[in-house]
Length: 238
Image (cartoon, rainbow, N blue to C red; front, side):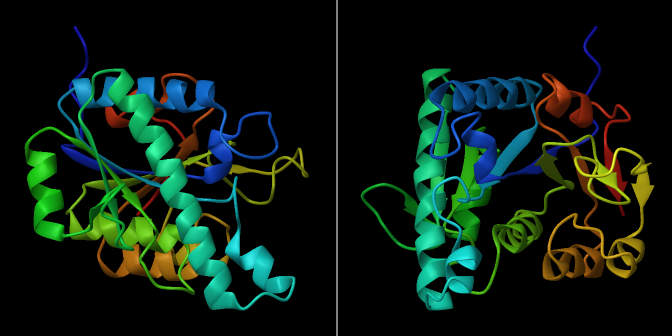
């Protein structure tokens, strides 16, 4: 018997880098398809599911602004990159027979619906997967902040942050093999220890509104379903 999900509504935050696999740039369709298969499994459990995907595999606004580009222009370019990723995920999900809607914070009616909160909630109630694109629609905010904001707007039970490592560590485990993996943390500990879970504004938004964050490894097949079914996976920040 399949364990029942412990969450009714989730928001899954994916990095743009997750979509490029070993390519170093752009989108690996096979990776997009494998992510879509995992999301479909969660959806099949009856969990209302929304996604926010970054754009770092195509364009990273912060890096471009450090190199001398105007920050606002760079951030808008990064937002457009997230729309490309959202459309790739939508294509992969719909090939698996899952009804999906892309809702963009920047209006572009030919490729995505504009983000309207009530419409988003209606889509979820009708069993459609939502992919929120173009961040918050404003520069100077990361897709982490967009994920926190959208999760609160749709009243998600939890924000799932998918990464390349098993959870939150005391330091970068790829650089420090003795780094300690935390199973649970408070928002205050994350801020005080300057742990790179999400950016500080996203953490503060979740803290102020008591929205738990679960950080887990996306690269381990089945992890999204395990998290949703309440298994002890990754790090819980609450």
